[in-house]
Image (cartoon, rainbow, N blue to C red; front, side, top):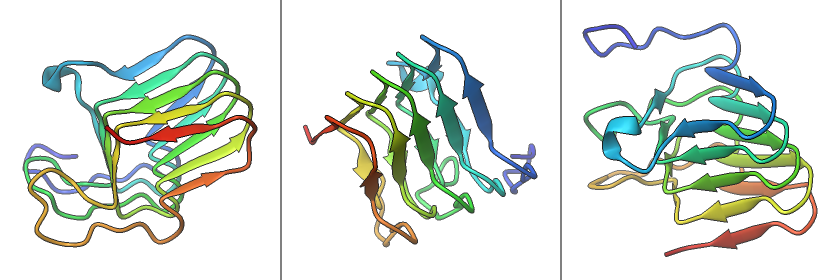
Length: 139
């Protein structure tokens, strides 16, 4: 994003993690990332034990307006990863679990956001899983 709030797209992924035990975002609102308007995935994780938490992916900052990523909002390849407490909308699939085992998708708003009066649906599945032993839960 630029300082005036307009999209400044990356040619590829917004955040690209290749490794283990990393965290994107965090438990506090101040830790939140806005990952939007990229020409690849919003967040692409390759590795084990990573966490994507409390982020806005494909949604504009400051207001619940659509500003999607071309591919997945969050794409996971690896074991024991977690996507939680995030708002994810207006992407290809919202969350794509491409491979791996024991991924947890917890308490996310997929296709909507806090205070969203409009549809922020994804252009594919809300959650697409090709991995094994995935847990998907709400509150």
